[in-house]
Length: 116
Image 1 (cartoon, one colour):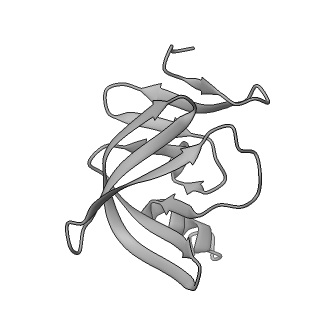
Image 2: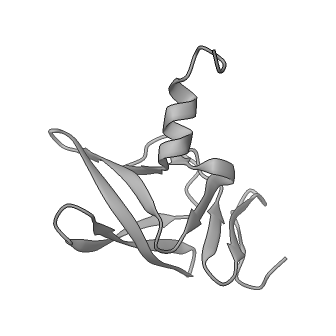
C-alpha cells in the first residue's frame, strides 16, 4: 500500500493514489470507470442543494488528502469558476452532497440495448 493511500475506519481502502495524475476513490457517489479520477480530465458534477440540484461540467485540476479529508479542486468548463469539493473518508453513511461522473460511465449506465 502506498503511504498516501487511505483506509477507512472499517478497514476498507477508500483512497488509492496512482502517480502522477490519478486517484481512485471508492465511494458510492464516484461514477467513473474503476472509480478513477485523473487531473485535467472533464467530469459531470451533481451537487445536492437545499432547493434542488446543480449540474455542471467540470475539469479536475488537482486533488489531495489530509487528515482523512479528500479535496478535489475543480474548474467549471462554462465559466472558469474554481472551487474545492471535499469529503470525510471516514464517513460510511448514505447521505452525499455531491457526485462526479464521467461521460462514458453515465452513457453506459443508461444503456439497455446491450450494443444493439
